[in-house]
Amino acid sequence: MFLLQKSKTKASARAQIAIRDVKDGVLVLPGNRYRAILQVSSVNFELKSEDEQDALIDTYESFLNSVDCPLQILIRTREIDMDKYLAELNERLMSEVEAVYRNQLANYNDFIRKLVSANKILTRFFYVVVPHGTNTSADFDMAKVQLDVRVDIVSKGLARLGMQSRPLSSLEVLDVFYSFYSPKQAKTQPLTEQVLRVLQAGYIQKGELTL
Image 1 (spheres, rainbow, N blue to C red):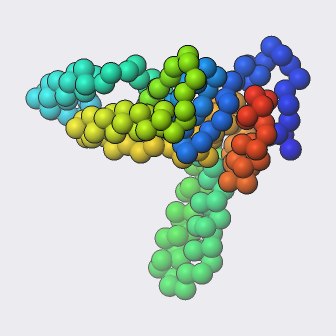
Image 2: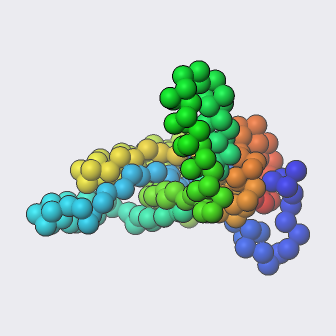
Image 3: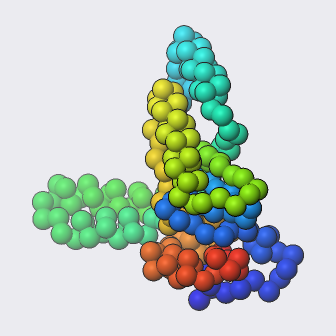
């Protein structure tokens, strides 16, 4: 299975990904460093009035001053796999008995298929990476508690900006890396809980993860 193959190219970028483990939604890196990743909604700044923009900037400044650690903002643009949606749309079309609705679904189905054939359908994801780390030995449970406190502070600060956030699960954390380094496979062969258990059982902890 391609996901579990060991990289034979020492100089490859994938061989340099040092992931010790992903546990309880926490990314564990070498040197007892930990990361929580929040998926965050966006705010359309340009559609705000001038007063709203000024208030948003002030709130953002206050939010940054309330955080006691550096934050990483990650923006990912990914292509949407439309095959499942088109299959479901076709099923609805075949099961519709009302002529009017069936005609509307048929027109919509044709429109979507022409759109997909000529264009890539993209979506954008926003993430905030919250760190916790030390160069000395650290108990994971203790680090998780401290990291949860930081995540809570960041989440509340983002909420004041009108942005919803949620921590990624262990599977979603790995999928961020997987979709980045293997975008084609990520579309056709998404990660599953079974694959996550296999990775955690051996390849991640041995430092031999190849995405």
